Length: 132
Image (tube, rainbow, N blue to C red; front, top):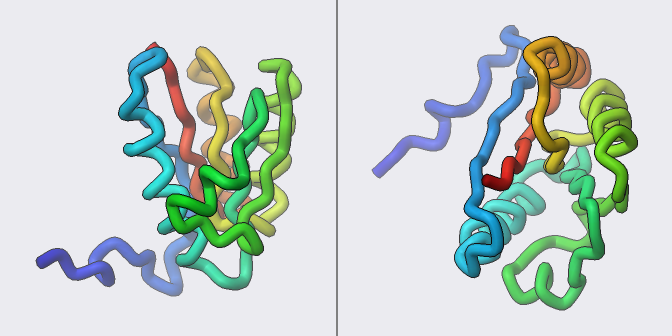
């Protein structure tokens, strides 16, 4: 059994960072992999948002079927990659989300470092979805 407290940040340490998840294009298991994580994240931090920056619509009924707390998630539609990156940076830096999920496309090392800095500033985690 894994002790969940091992993964919790210490109160003195700043929390925030970037995690990338690589998904196979059009694989049916993407939903089965991603939505349970979204559901868990929506229920884990009562005082801040789980923010999902999505290039397309997200089916509310599908979220509910996986147990996502719809009161704790905000979905932002950002179809353009450049807009998506700016919105991602803002959502991370503001500090009102505990996790921000986005599909920003290919990032340069400089852009990745900017997102990491925004995540640290906002004490937030970024979950970047990369499709290959």
